[in-house]
Amino acid sequence: MIKVFIVDDSALVRQVLTACLANHPSIEVIGQAADPIFALEKMHKRWPDVLVLDVEMPRMDGITFLRKIMAEHPTPAIICSTLTEAGAAITLDALAAGAVGVFTKAKVGLKESLQQLSGELIKQIEIAARSHPHAMPARSGAAPPARETPRTTETSSAPILISTTDRVVALGTSTGGTQALEVVLRQLPVDCPGIVIVQHMPEKFTAAFAQRLNQVCAIEVREARHMDRVRSGLALVAPGGRHMQLKRSGAQYFVEVLDGPPVNRHKPSVDVLFRSVAKHAGQNALGVIMTGMGDDGARGLLAMREAGSRTVAQDEASCVVFGMPKEALRMNAAQTCESLNNLPKLIVQYARC
Image (cartoon, rainbow, N blue to C red; front, side):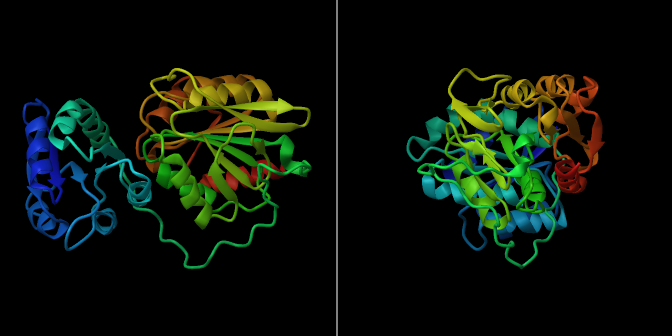
């Protein structure tokens, strides 16, 4: 049985979520609370396998509570949130603090919405129960060093010729990736190769996610736009709800952002990105498949290896969910298996070899 504890200041939400989960044969709601302080008192008596957690609550906000839990007793948590412009940043803070999933609450028709989405919540709880969240490393108080490479804008007319533009690093990740990507990108210097990223994330979240990373990294990080140039010191994050592909024009790489059906149930899909990198970059690329549920990206990483790319899988010990990397290793798509803490060094070494 998966033991679930619900923390939400809305009595209606607690009631409806409990009722939605009550008849599931492998889920047991062991408790609920209106705020984190009361929740902790109950949880110490019987610790849950999964937390379903609101963000804005009395006495202690959900993010502070999650950080406390992750520091003292890392526990898989699913954030209940509304997908609004203002709420996205708060939810991203929660994901960065260690949450492994996001569940959307409607602003109106709450009861009906939660009942209709109960299947999605159950799926997320099952995924969360198989995850192994880690506390984020303590952040340095120092600001990131100034960026040395100029930024491009949509109005830029002259191309920026940088010696490292013939190298591309492709990163693919899902559950646990918001934390993992921050660990990697924060440690990269401004002269690192151009980076293209697929992180499984809902539409409207990726722009705020990229902005958040941009604030804490020395390199520039932003949501990709159609025909963006891939260049040194820049990481492009595929927009939620769109696929991203790498293309090449002469000696320069750029990305296409396009619509299309989900691949491996995802849009953006890691496989779509990795296969395009295999086709257009080949031996000039490094592919890294990171923490995540399922097998998206494994076949694409194999295509990269067959095209001459260097390929790496994140190791099990540092993954929140060892699904995507495990499948890549099973297919012999990854040449090596590395810990999360070794990935920044590996990327830097790749740029210099």
